[in-house]
Length: 98
Image (cartoon, rainbow, N blue to C red; front, side, top):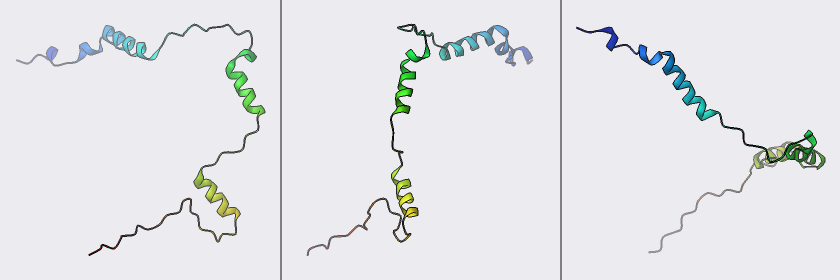
């Protein structure tokens, strides 16, 4: 005789088990906020704000990857130079001595 009470996972979905599972998952995601070493009276006192303001004031040259730079030089050039970012040679075998 098979009873359906022994073959169902209905106990897994009880309200208490759901609450326990959620609390366990949330505990790993939510961290206590650390106390700030100082209280800011305005946003201008923030270190991040100052860093962003300083970064905007300084002039920066645009950064490009080597492959993009090679492509840009090809486009700006007369089109005769092949697009190569690095010099490559075929391997050479040394002749064996008898």
